[in-house]
Amino acid sequence: MISSLAGSSAFAALIWWVVPIAGLLGGLGYVVWVSKFKSKFETETSRSVGQFQRFQDSFRQELPAEEASLPEDGASSPEKL
Image 1: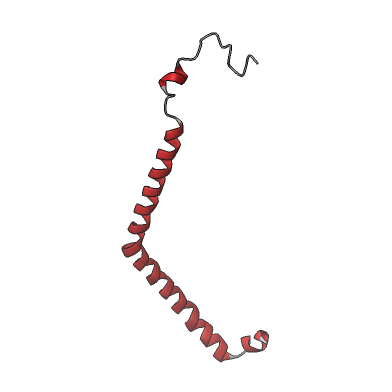
Image 2 (image 1 turned 180 degrees about the vertical axis):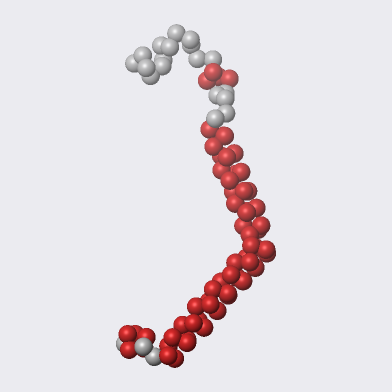
């Protein structure tokens, strides 16, 4: 059905109007998004990344004093068992 429409001048004229209008609307939509909404998403993303980094850092904290004072001979280490 499309092949029969492709030969008509009305279909060709429609394509020449629809494609540029769609491109123009897409471009305008992108400009509006960048100017108004992108900063909101960036701040939420950086806040989320910061929370994730704090979560990762919580695993890198030093051991409590009682665990750090284990015997130095390694008798209870898993490598020796």
